[in-house]
Length: 106
Image 1 (tube, rainbow, N blue to C red):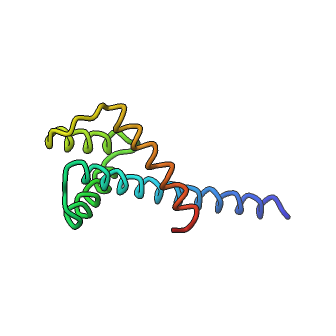
Image 2 (cartoon, rainbow, N blue to C red; image 1 turned 180 degrees about the vertical axis):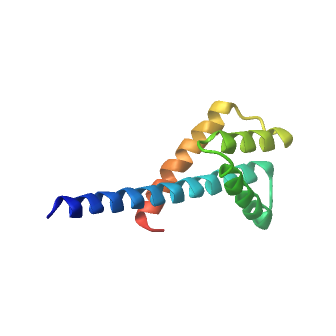
Image 3 (cartoon, helix red, strand yellow; image 1 turned 135 degrees about the vertical axis):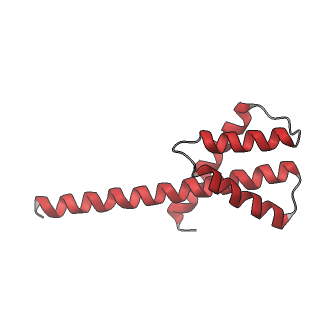
């Protein structure tokens, strides 16, 4: 195997890893959105719509702060009492679940 072949292989692997991580982060946002929708008391369709809005909000900037701010503000608006730590823990839990799901291809 030549150096160029190996380099192309590494670039392809890096690109695939980045795509999988992007999908996992989007899935995390949806999972967190559905979780928050349940706490707020939204119906099935309202929950799906809300989860989509959370995914869009997560794309506003790099990192997780945009996602956290959206969830924090919406829970506060509906008088759902959770600490920042509880929300961030749920975000981490959802990301772990999403990564497993994306790697499994589901």
